[in-house]
Image (cartoon, rainbow, N blue to C red; front, side, top):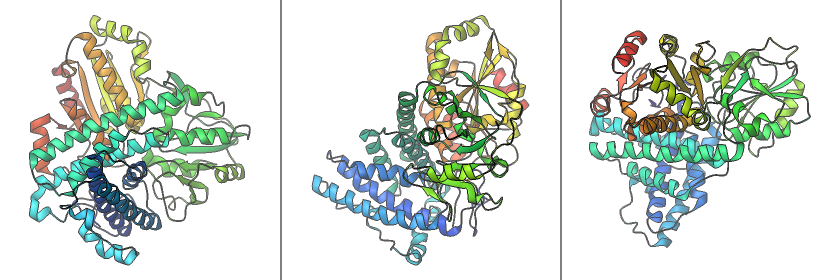
Length: 546
């Protein structure tokens, strides 16, 4: 086991029996094997696409398989053994497709030809060949670090693509671009400029994927609307839905109609309470708990059934609620019941068997629903406040939260921002300060909750629109970025921001270990990335640049 893909990995990387996230060495090794085989799948799919041949089954499996390898998604050994078998079958399917299309298959990279075996013992023996670190001595930290930047950005992009596919939306051209970048990695490239170009290409692709996902969400559920969401429980039986999958939440709401069960969102599903297509369900009563890293205390105290729909699962065995938590989509934990067909009747039965909340707890609400469409409806007001000087600065403070010390930085920064500034926030990083009352400017809340991490697309569109209306470039806006980094979706969003030319991004609280000092030097030099320091000092530097 060797893993450096998230902010909480051990110093020097997780190279132990159980990583910081709870992933065992066996699972980590199987994930490496699956990834190496998937690079081979894309190598063939890319050759086929170049000749106009595509296979939706290969594309669908690709986004799902890549998603399972993100931090805190799937910890189930048996599922990965099965996924590897499926991946080998998909690789053969892609090979046949490429061959029949007339593609030249004479110089395929190692992942296209590698055979790791099928049994757990064979896969364990093959795992060292798939390790991301195996070329460190040969290729050096700059090349390996940039390779990992591309790799983990692709993981995040695949996750967003899988969210869209779960809602029935996909684009063959996007899948073809994903295969092309994956095939590039399959050849273990060493050219620094080519790797940087690939990283920015991932950012470009992720922008297209986030736009596709935004269209899937708004097309099915309507545009988010500003709303006050309840953050305290109501009396009654209860189901808690966590993760990112709004489609699963809708299925649960439909299947629990008239059953006397209240449904709550958790973590990244908080913004779901702003969608008209979901608000219409009266038994969607609000949000319970905070960000993903608080789930063990949140889930332990929740007196009902729990569904983890996409990612950010933490070991459910420590607190003993494994008898009432279910997984769905790419999520897995050995021994937990998995909902594979959107039939949530076992969850409903579990909720009815649990005590539920005995009484209402005093209502506490927070404002949400300030996605791009909502902000654009008041664009004239916002632009007027900027032109008049009533709003002097805009801050984008958000991203992935985490459990390690130092993340109070984002809370402290938000509270220290001047009263004549607005804060756009998204992702679970907003839980650091979204219950704080920071006031308003002419009735506009100072904290504008844009949505989930994938709603970075909304924040980008707001920035681009405001800059265009003011006749300046985005980097000329009094807009400052403080991005809470944790895992691979954040990597994809960061690469999108770099692709768009955004500069002076404060990134923290600690940087991922795959961003080696050599790679960080490259990013600082070329993109003016700024590792976060002390909140007050960073704020002063931001304001001086206005």
